[in-house]
Length: 96
Image (cartoon, rainbow, N blue to C red; front, side, top):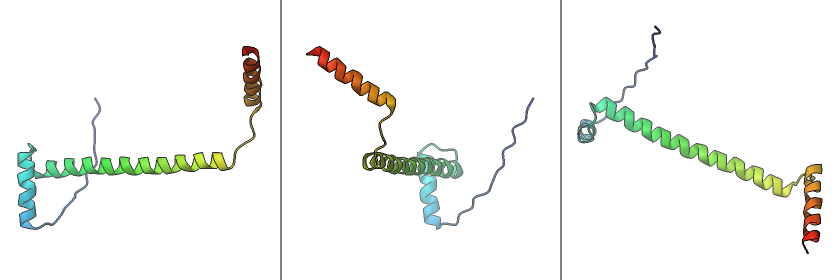
């Protein structure tokens, strides 16, 4: 039987009393067990969204760089591509 051990870290925050009461009300109305669950789950959801958006932007920028590099610095066609073009031209000439 294996035992799962998770490392825990503490997160403390100081905030105005009114803000804490506001968050507690939201936690209660949202059906969360307590303020800690509300804060952790809400922050986790927001963090996932931010990370996903940033990774999409980075991937999009990388894709753009690859695309524009391929257009501005085209490579010589491979032997297979040349053969495919010849086959296509033959096909077209035989279709007429």
